[in-house]
Length: 277
Length: 242
Image 1 (cartoon, helix red, strand yellow):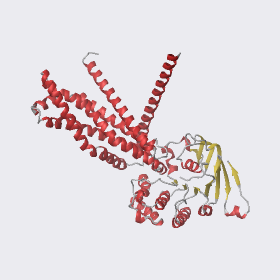
Image 2 (cartoon, chains in turn cyan, blue):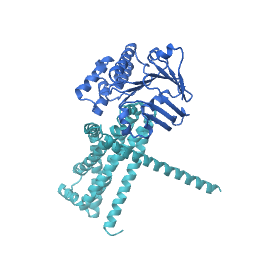
Image 3 (spheres, chains in turn blue, yellow):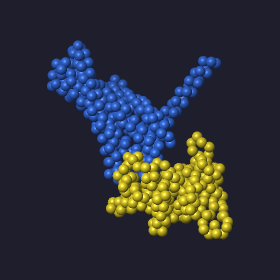
């Protein structure tokens, strides 16, 4: 009976975990729906109000993150170019460097590194900001004034977050692809024309869709989880760091899982297009 | 929109993880006049006021305004009522990243109730009334607690509501602010359509002076007592239970 009981208790634990994750995901998705609904139904909230919050979010999340993004992108681009060009030269396929860069930087590392950077910088900031607003009863005050916090606080942050993540990811890829090449000019003799031609041949329309989907949804995931966690603060200030940590952990899990899922779907689609599946 | 009646029907409420504060309460709230909500700490005075303001929903039962069940309304459906209700917090409630001026301007600007010059004029009047104009460009964290309290109270008046709800309005108020507050209540009652005032109290003299009727909250029961001059002169108390 011992091993059987152990097995059943493990299945119980797994079942509870699955239910918890599913419930959490549904609640977060519900918040996305409710915030969009609130923004549509809120007749009082003019475009001006939304734009002012969205632009502030873009400034903090996008503009202020550019220096750090530059450093990460230069380092990532340089490392990938150095490693791949050396290995490809050994294999006699140096012209494939563009394909490798598109696959690694544009499809995978760009969206993932940008998302992690935004989680670390802005996800934490938004979760703690909203959490503190709960503690200071600012959210209740907004409701008391007839201002829906979902349309006034959550919706503009999601919109600003999505725009910021898309722009930052584009910036990351551009710096990694071009700046990374320039960094390696000192130790590599690959001509720029050769590199640029290889890159141009590697890009496809599917890459653009994958880029937009990955970064757009990552932006939604990061900011809705940050707002959701912040809103969970009930009364006490000691809950704020707890929800902030939880926002980071959950955002990382959901973003990486989403990226993995998108990549899997992308390659399954390619295999189907090639007639392999 | 005029608020004419407030009714709780089979209302139950309790904070998550805590013992219920109210179970199966049915009560017609007294309208008109200044209603002091009193009772021992932790019995649900603030919760009752938040339910009246639509900031908390009963766990079960209903809350009717003018015969309409608020618990069944969406945020948008309740908005016309909410704009007629002013709510003053005991602590906090000011937006930390906005100046005192912007805190008062926000509801007027957001709902587009007034053209900008008129909105500014109204806010300036209220700030001047509470002697807050010199702090108007400061954020809540950089003014005294008394000024923050005065700002919260002043903000409840900006939409010229017909019902005002205050959680411990006199706590943290200096004598001048109390005087300004009482004067403003009277002014809004006579000139701007203020009809119902509900406030919690810890037995301060100003609140006893202000109250024309009283709701006592104790052990999940609501008891109403008439404190109007007529009732006092009659030497008795009219009492109703809910």
